[in-house]
Image (cartoon, rainbow, N blue to C red):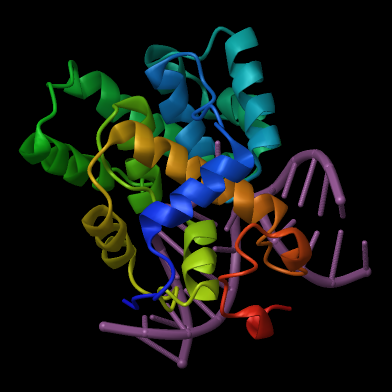
Length: 222
DNA sequence: TACCAGGAGAAAA
DNA sequence: TTTTCTCATGGT
């Protein structure tokens, strides 16, 4: 992992927060709704996830029992707007069956958090980002979430190649930052905000980027 | 029209 | 082990 002479992850956060302000993540009224959203948002815009969650709520199906017991066709129709609805039906039901079987989640110290993370990753359809969304935003554990925006940002700032495996990038953030749930929640949300608005995959808007003065890789854009 | 989006798992190389 | 393919709706 590269060291940037004029930039570290704490100063990057300060720039983002000063520029964009609080993002009020994760949208969702209960921890369980956050967990459902974490599955539904896989490779999908949040706007479409909101439609699916609203449909689940209207159908009285936004509960672990309701999702686990639902007919797959019915459930698929409800979550259809979020895309990949056949895949996500299986994933949601896998997750909810685990959730119901597991019962009360323990108070999570670091050891218990690591164990729970392994449990989540053992569920078919719960990968590292989804597991970490659940741990950070639903269960308030200091786990830094890595996503495609994070990889792109690290690559463009030349703080990383961006192709590192998930846990390497997560360890990089967690080593550079103090373990603080509110910080991690806000930071990830700010990275997504910056990625969607400015540091886009194609045609990034470097002219209005708050990092323009310190970003070394403008020549890589396009 | 083509590309992209708050990924993950299976199949192929 | 690493890369490629598949899943799918909705916005730009």
